[in-house]
Image (cartoon, rainbow, N blue to C red; front, side, top):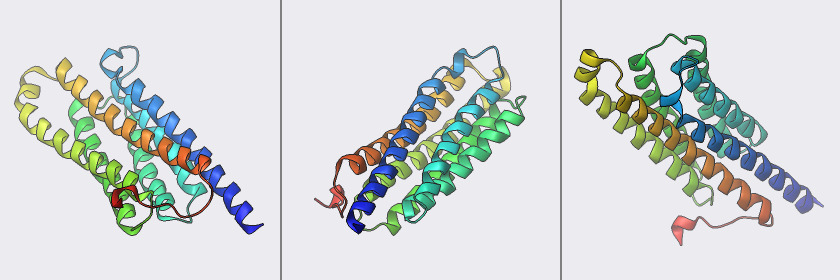
Length: 203
């Protein structure tokens, strides 16, 4: 009876992870359209995507707050939602306040996932969290370096289309990786009987 209850709980957790991941992937696709947005401020558009993705991640984390993945999802989701809310409520923000904030968000969010991955030694979810965290941190570092290189061009010409397109691509890549990771975790939990599973990185 206990095993059946545990199995149902795990499948429910999987369904929520799958749903959160699907919504996050949808936000990643929407992010690619950032350079085309004209009717609303770009900061508000970007912020709305982060806010939705962050709230979805928080909901996922609250449901499974009993494990390290859940705690990391709550922390990462809150950071994402707060950054998104700042952008939404400050639509007049220009490219340079927004882009460094996105880079910092990537670093903090990635760190949350890497810390959780370290705490889940031997658990099969560890590989997914580690991959998500490393990619976010890498994207954050690359974005920071890119901003340093393009700072003079920004001063002279303002936010050029390639700059905006790069920011959109970085944001889309981060959300896509995060969403796919959640979908994969959800799919495995929904389809696999309850019980420990090996970490694929150790095979």
